[in-house]
Amino acid sequence: MKNVKNAVKILIVLFTIVLYLPIKAQQQWKFHIAFEDATMARDTIWYIWDTTATFEGADTLLNEVSHEFDYDKFNVWTYNPGLFYSDSIKTLAFPYEFSLGGQIDAMNFELPIKITWDSSLFHAPWLPSTPVGWVNSAGIGNDYFFMINNVEVGGFFDMTITDSIIAPEPDNPDPWFWLPARHFPMGIAMSQDPSTTIDVPRANINAFFRLDAYPNPFNNNVKLKIESPNPNESYTISVIDLFGRLLHQAELSGAYGNYDGPVLHELEYKLSIAPPGFYIAVLQSKQSVVSSIKIVKLK
Image (tube, rainbow, N blue to C red; front, side):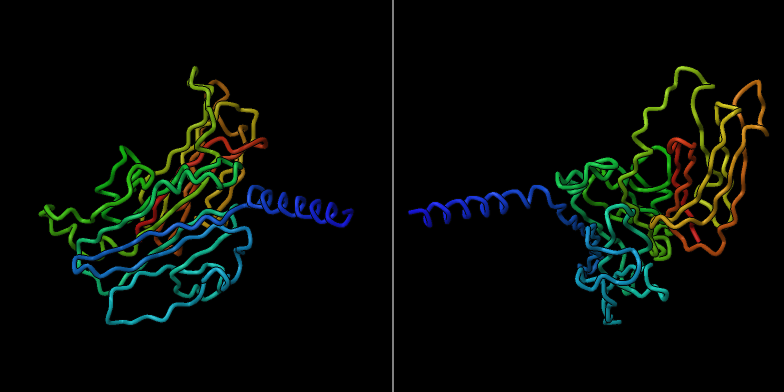
């Protein structure tokens, strides 16, 4: 009888562990972007956030492997930035703390291209609660989406608003939009960006930070204009890519500003060797990120 009771206790403990583990474990976030051209040829890019993924090298267990192409068919691909030769892949896996995305290229396609995804996954309940808890920034950028998009400002297509887009629209008569080079390569950016959720006080013009970029999009050089309210505070301005890698950084001191009003700074960065795509300029105080802006390099 005693053995039976012990066995029951063990089963209860094991059952409890089995129930508890899925709740505590961080599930994998897997997201696909599907492409279909005018001939109905299809291909897909997969993005994965996983606690087992690494930023450096290739996560072969997550299918982050070099892809062999059939050069007679429609193909889309992206790149593994963790490999020194950035080999072409169809699945990109990163740890949760990194943004997902990068440049997507294509071959053997006929316009228009239909792009589809599942925007409900941006609110997947198993996404980590920090820093945001959901994907609050997701966009597509290229020459076409700079001109034709679903946002008032920014020059990119916001993926959080809808689940699909056709580019160009079949009734668009302008031949400029039907040039293949307007559509590929395209930049994809998905992130859980805490800086977009900061509640910045707006009651007084001297009580908030302002960060602007121009021209945006740009080809080689971009200028950043920073307005900060506190002449005694020092800040750091950084330009990073979608994978969190630092391209440029500068320290800003209020000592060079106008003490009678907001402190103004203007910096110019040369990004001629950087590949086309999305980048992020981040303004940071000693305490936290106070402002950020997405910038787009066209070529």
